[in-house]
Length: 201
Image (cartoon, rainbow, N blue to C red; front, side):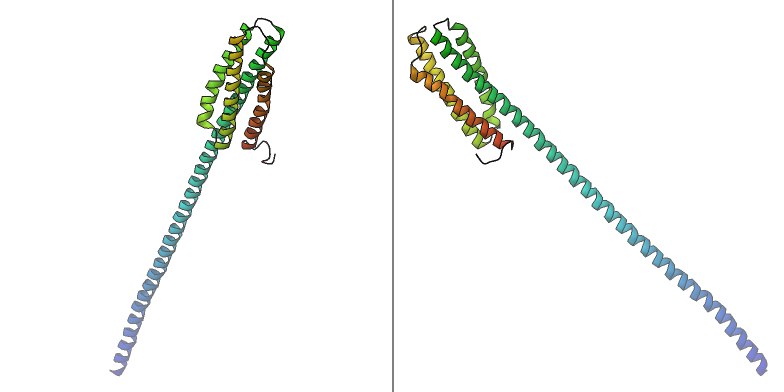
């Protein structure tokens, strides 16, 4: 009977061992599966974070590119304004000098006066645009040019009204010719602002 109990005990230990081995194997398999799932979740989270960082960098780059493009467009528009204003001012000055030359020769001044009036109108339109676009220091220089050219225009008109066919007084000629210095200073200021020249004089 003892042997049958022993055989029964051995059989029982074998069954318990087999069942516990299956249970331990299952527990280990579950643990490994959980580790794999946690690792995958961590990897997905890292991938998502990386994608979000890359997207943020791309958006930041696109934003900077848009800002840079906008700055370039503004700079090009400012440069075009400078060119137009400089050309209009020089043309206005040139027509004033032409009126002086014609007065000196005693020829008919009407064509030159009409050209001066057209140049004055073009200059005023260019100056009106410049007032909206130019930065402070350049606008100050442009204002000096505008005042100087308009003062000279007034002096020429007065000379023409007083004696349309007589030479302009020397002081009127000197004033008109002196505007070239003001125009040169305006051009230097514009070139400095566009960084064509150094800030140094």
